[in-house]
Image 1 (cartoon, rainbow, N blue to C red):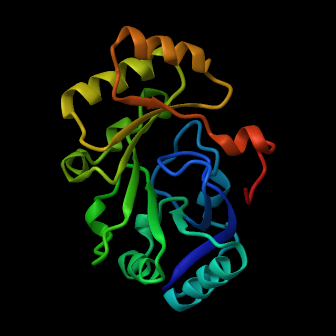
Image 2 (image 1 turned 60 degrees about the vertical axis):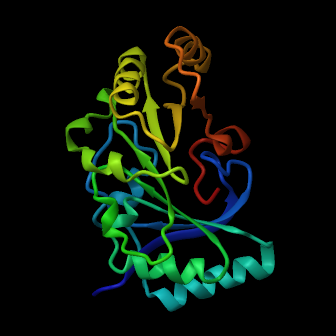
Length: 222
C-alpha cells in the first residue's frame, strides 16, 4: 500500500537545530536505510513497527489542527528517514502553503533531490561519524546542495568523532549552520567546547538535545 507510513505525531518544542525551543508539529515516519549504533529511534525503523498509512490531505489536517490548537509555526518531518517516503515533496509544499516553516531531518545517506518541492524546505542533515558505523554510507554530493537555510549536524560520541567532524568541515566549508551534538551520556559537552576552542571552530555551534533534559531521555512523543 502506498502512502506515508506515520508512526507518531505530536506537538512539542524543537529540541535541537536553528529553531530550538520553538513549538513545532513533529511528523515521524517509519523506516530508515541506516542502522546507527547510537540511534535513539530504532523502534521507528523496525519492519514490524505499527504505522498508520496516511496521505497528504490527512497530514495537512493534522497540521491545521496543531495550528488551531497550539499556534505552531514550524513542522518537522522526521523518522526514520523521511526522504524514503513517497511524495515527500508534495507534502512539504502542502505544509508550506499553510504558512509553516518546514524542516526535514535527514540522515545524509539519501539525495536531497528526493524532495522535489516547489517550496524548498529547510534540511537538517547529518553527517555520520565513525562511532555510528555508517559513515561510508554518506551521500557526499549533498554537501554542495546545502544552503544558508539548512543545518549540517555532526553527532559525536568521542574524540575520534570530533576530529573527523573537523576534517569534514575544513574539506567542504559548508555555507549552512554547523552543529556538533553529543551522543547523550557518551561524551562530556565540556570536552566538546574545549575541542572547539583548540581547533578554532568559531563558526560551529554546540547543541544539546533540550527534550532529553526536560523529559526522560527514553520518552516518546516529546
